[in-house]
Length: 163
Image (tube, rainbow, N blue to C red; front, side, top):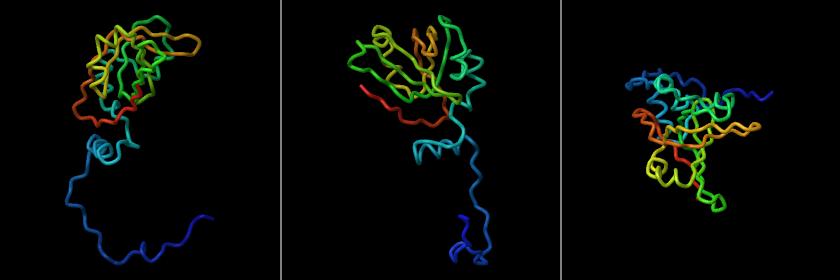
C-alpha cells in the first residue's frame, strides 16, 4: 500500500486554526490568480464565463464545429493558443483558437491576413467569421473577418507563435 502514517510535521500540533481575514475568491478571481501566478489554470476555461453572451452573438462552440456541414458560414471565438505563418505556406496564416469545449483551426489567406493583421496579432482572444471547411474529418474555418473578443474579466494566457 502507498499510504504511510502521518509524520511529525503534519500531526495536529494543538494550535487552533484561525480563519483567514481575506474574503474567499470567486471563480473569476481564482482564474485570474491562477493565470497571474502560473500562466494556466486547472479550473474552468476563461471562455466558459462568457458563453451565454457568445451564444447571443451566434458564436459556435469549437466542439460543435466538426458536426456542421462544409461550406457553411460560421462564427467561432477563443483564446489564441497558436499563430503560425510557415515559410512554405505562401503567406497563409494559421490560428488555433481554444474555447471551453475544444480547439477551432482557422486559416487566413494572405490578403485577409494583411487586411486584419492588427487584430490578429494584437489580441489574446478573437472572434472569427468564415466559411467552414469540413472535408473527410479535416475541419477548419477560412476566415473572412477577425475582431477582438473583449472579455474584461478574463485572464490571458500567452500564445505559442511561430513564424
